[in-house]
Length: 292
Image 1 (spheres, rainbow, N blue to C red):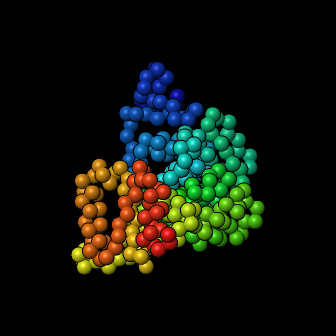
Image 2 (image 1 turned 90 degrees about the horizontal axis):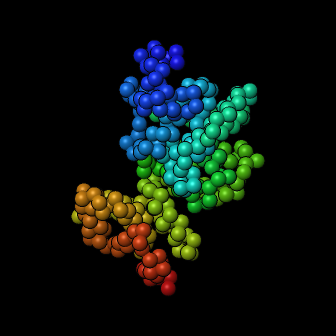
Image 3 (image 1 turned 45 degrees about the horizontal axis):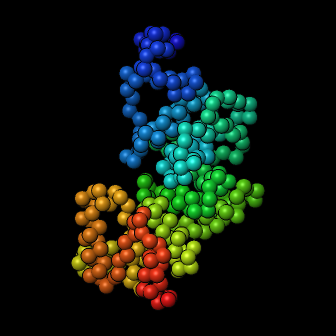
């Protein structure tokens, strides 16, 4: 109540109105007081909730960092729906700290490399990725890794060398073999988890791995074009079109101009959407690559 009274908030307003909702037990926010906080352009209500709970936890426990999937969500990495919830995962080097709050887990360890991202205290990205090894499938790990080393949300937050360094120095890790395989499959420069999924699908069905953003010189575009994925020798491009591509007139126009330039350069363009029949897609790719 002391801090609330200093802000002119009565007990009634604190406890019985919507002005001060609970963020974490013992920490409330004042809706009538504004403060500028760094927020990524792509942030949604889920991200805002995670960041607020993390800031609230730091008010009660100054030495904690975002850990595990909470840190991954803060970074904006793609995660399966099962991991998109309001559970708060924290870590600390303080062996004596105990947190007994609903939907809050604390990991106490000396193996912590702290970092800050948008002013939020988080575990170093490469360490976060290693923590995900015990939780995620191989495909989901690769999608998270592609996001971490790529720039589809923000500039790269880590590099493959960081991941290899941790895996070489730690012999005891849950999901170690899965992590090693995931790092082998991570590629820089990927623009979306759908791109990653399409590339991994190609590998699984026995197709050659397509190149991420192959460089195509175009006279029509007067420069270099980079399709999502491609087979340079066969001049075959794979483009994943999400619903956003069709909803945005500007994006739709850019896509059409890119495709026209690719065709003008002698390339074949195969469009992929969430409704694509992948058996037919595989047959088309095999035919184009001469693998029938």
